[in-house]
Image 1 (cartoon, helix red, strand yellow):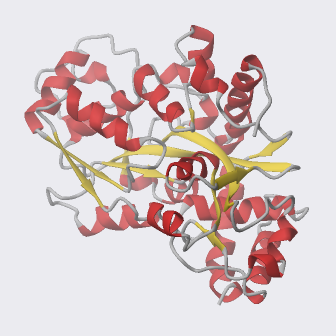
Image 2 (tube, helix red, strand yellow; image 1 turned 180 degrees about the vertical axis):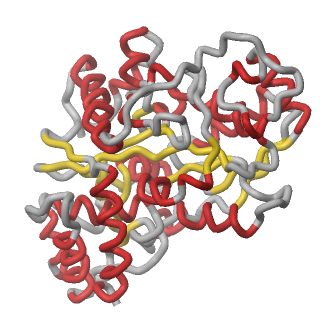
Length: 381
């Protein structure tokens, strides 16, 4: 797929972080999360905004171990290498039981689960969310700044740590090369060759990957992120042509051939080669669409110390490299490259980046979310 030198490929990963920095351009500033300073042994973990509030990192670990549980939601094990990440946390902290709930639900359904289970031990402690849903639900999050906070681009984090970018990629098209040719441009998917074959990963009013698919269709249709209507129109045409496949994409649907052509993040599409050796991935020429998912702590987390320990774990060098191993671009990639802590071989294996990349700003994401809520269902019915 790519013929970059190692240096150029690493640069491509950094370029995503730089361009994705537009996503939170309205936010600025950074809190001090160095972890220094005196702590209070009686600290309420639910109000802690950094390691310093616990005293030391060891104190945070002790508090999390005392809780003994961590509830996660919407973390498929084949998504960005989350399986290995979850297993590493369990190995590192055997005193903490990880409860994995509803791995395939959307970002919006994560919030719904928190509301439904509020006050119960079963409520999610942490979220992994698309930007649009994160922006719409900041009152559901607790502010927290990890010890590696300064390595995260300011534009990829809400200033108080309500939500923070974690890993990202480019919207791509995966396809079964034994049955279909690689699309060279978006309009190819409207041809009869792709009858009943093209799926997106979820509902764009609820799922970040599906939202991004409409964003990609918008910019590939000569539109701008100020107005997602061209993208909605494309999927409406795809539906009228009989090519839009309304099936939720999973590893099983890829392996079985039920969803043979899929809009999804490049790192997710690339992972399916393990299930289907004929599966290939293309990032269309022209304007590319990039995006980051975001971490957040449930303001009503039943295990608030474990939730904060999980965040520290995710933003460590070790786990940032595990996301990279999964084909995603970790949010600390630029800083880790400069520090020499990035896995250079994994960085060199990343796909070629588009020449031009766009990422929606906060205002654009909010506007697009509103428009999709109004127009999507009717457009694809």
